Length: 304
Image (cartoon, rainbow, N blue to C red; front, side, top):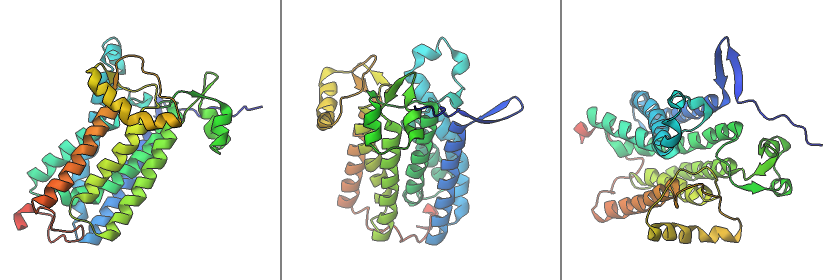
């Protein structure tokens, strides 16, 4: 009855070169985010070339960071299969690793060029979460980053189209479309950050709200996944994270972990939420948040 074909991860071939949907979707998210950021920079009177120049550093650093992060936590596999380390088209880009790579590159770029980090960070924050929302569909095509088994009737109850439902059918078993949950969460976050621009918050608070919003969704959605990067940590920390996730037990069962007792993404997400809240409170108490989002006299630190 249900005979929809699974989507081929390869979009098309150019001779011996295969172009994967995973790369197309990530590239689309990056280009759309770049366009939005340069458009906003121009509206605020910031030279769009600064955004373009920064992205030349940030985008490669994000991809490298995302891959290295994933490979490090899956080293037992890649130690025996080193030829797969560069095979990013098969999946295996960890978003938190990408964020680390991107923000390190962005930080060194603004320092090198004497630019104001939070001015640029506020501008690009909505672009980042939009790119993440689009990029998650690459996981969908690759049939990865999913949750535990569910029934087809459960997926039908979410009013999903058949082409999504059947893509979640992996070797005869249907799975939680956690990629979709996170993509929708990020799209809502994108709308929230755009709305915040109209509220004209204090400098840096769009950027820190991005961290809080993305991390909150990722923390709870990650608990449903069965392919989480994990490690074995202290029992008290595992108990704390499980307690924080426990409200989700009212709706769903957690995804199984093959090894370890702590999901790396949950720990990082929890840490980022605390960091972002702490930065907002600290900057306000120290009088460092007097400037609003639209008050951009100059993007250069040398002009301050």
